[in-house]
Length: 164
Image 1 (spheres, rainbow, N blue to C red):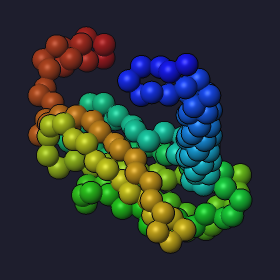
Image 2: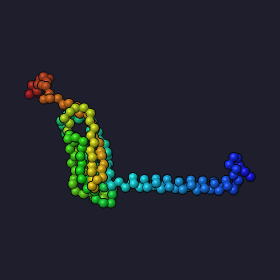
Image 3: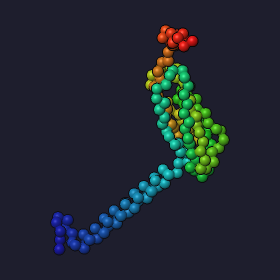
Image 4: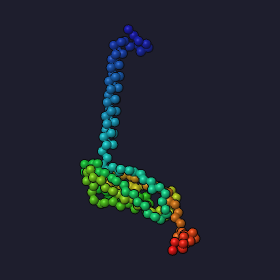
């Protein structure tokens, strides 16, 4: 029996089908192995930031604000923070120079002191164990604080005189 323009018999078609399904099975297995390898790489993060973003909200100009970022060593070896650097001089990170044992936590205290008013977004880079890196972000909106003290209030002076 012959099928169509290819002039193939039933036996040849069955053999081609087996080859097709074998190739399909090999491709499926290969792609599953590649996915598993990718998943394994994602799980092996040593330094884990409990949060990678913090919004200070509205803050007064020239008044320092602080936030503590928690880091956890989820690896099997101690972590050494080589440096914590920001994208400008208005941020002041503080951290321990001691290695972080596996399973332990540490803090990075991030300070921000704005000279200019308006919205800001700053990136802070953590370099650890030589050349590995992580980044967290801070943002907020700086409002201009009034210059000098508040004006005197005549009503308050009147109330003080009455209550004496």
